[in-house]
Amino acid sequence: MSTSFPTRSDVPGLCFMAAMFLGFGLFAILKPDALRSGMDNFANHWKEGIICSALFVYLAYVALSR
Image 1 (cartoon, rainbow, N blue to C red):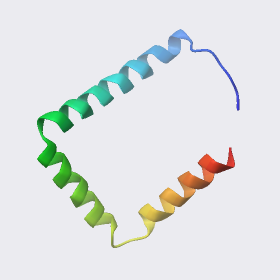
Image 2 (cartoon, one colour):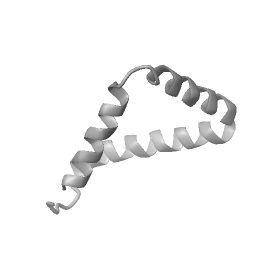
Image 3 (cartoon, helix red, strand yellow):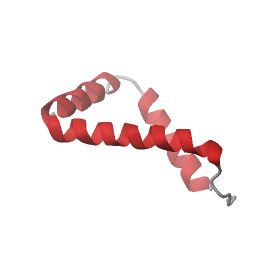
């Protein structure tokens, strides 16, 4: 693994990620039913195919190989 120090060019991406996490957290707190139904719809949509499971297998392979 490489170690690198953050630079000033990393700031916009970090701020964007922080805003997205904050927005998701607020949405989860304010509308938990909508979040639950959205996740259920996503799971039902991908239940029929193997594309999503192949993606998870690939992500696990990449994570464990490093």
